[in-house]
Length: 236
Image 1 (cartoon, rainbow, N blue to C red):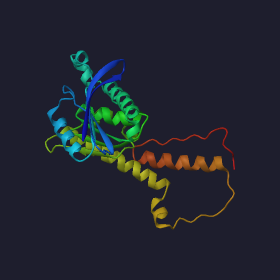
Image 2: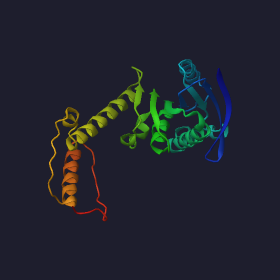
Image 3: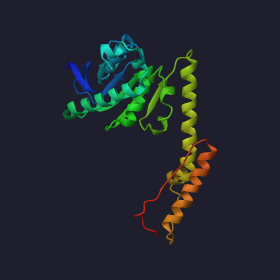
Image 4: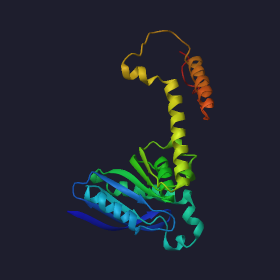
């Protein structure tokens, strides 16, 4: 049995129309973020939603803007606005479906992808995965290092703008990965060969050295690394 609900989702002082479809025994819910000039009735997103529903996943397609707001062209590209809507709708849905224990994911297209990425950072619940179809991650490059949800970027072969942004994202991830691996030697951890020994040391001095090392390595890779030690931290 599949349950369909026509919703009015409160977000940012307005009410957004949405359709939530949840198959029986669904384990997750995918929240869609449509692109600029589109709506919850997007044929492509509706098609993808049907495929997901057939695989046992629930879906929520909703309008990020009211009809009146969508008439103002700049609103369609106001990533701060539509990402807040995405986050607020996510929190409302998470609360409304708490008894079903549904894991949440995002599917974003075009500017909706940027909104989904930013919302995943700001929202107060875990987003288990994000899919970006022909997305605009270039609109939120500043927050990409903060995205913690596994993300799949689907890019058209004839879409050079998005393809270039995807390459930039991959380079940022590789740089961050190199810094982390320099600070924490994961290869030794995984192999069980990390040697430890007891030794007295000054905690603050040790952390200062770690911060200095991390900052130097980050700078080489075009990143910034900063750290602070609480005044209440012990010295040893």
